[in-house]
Image 1 (cartoon, one colour):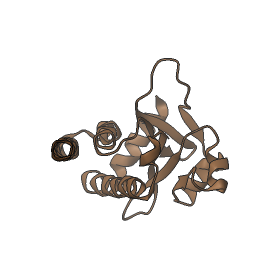
Image 2 (image 1 turned 180 degrees about the vertical axis):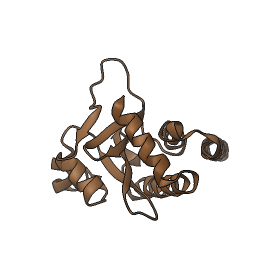
Image 3 (image 1 turned 60 degrees about the horizontal axis):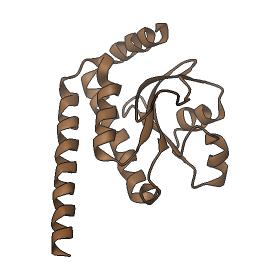
Image 4 (image 1 turned 30 degrees about the horizontal axis):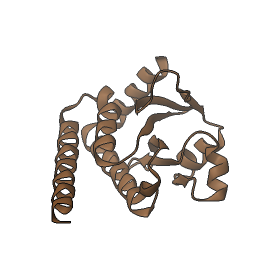
Length: 177
């Protein structure tokens, strides 16, 4: 039992160290790389096996970063502004999970969790974190709260690092791609 506990504690320590390193790196990234760098934080801090980050635009949300996907996996590159999931997550700024029957219908085959990244000052939805694959034991309230906290943290970093004009320029750049 003692050896098992020591292994678990060492693993948790490494997990925290990796998360700290990924979060610290966000302080030095270019604006165009912020969502990709945030994906590193999500990967280090959670057990999500597959997830996507979408940057929100006027006409919908464009996939900006993802982890865990392999060749042949299907996932949308763009979510239309009128899509029910977009209306709930970006429009109403609420977390949608497959735990809730109504939310499960919104998610369809798009994943297990979708949550907004909301600018702390303008209250606009900047991005959407969508988790498509998560171990069963991690699909509970504490990991959801961790993901929500990470989304809040990202919005704070975004707000401190970039002006609204910077964000508008990034939105135009990503929309053109």
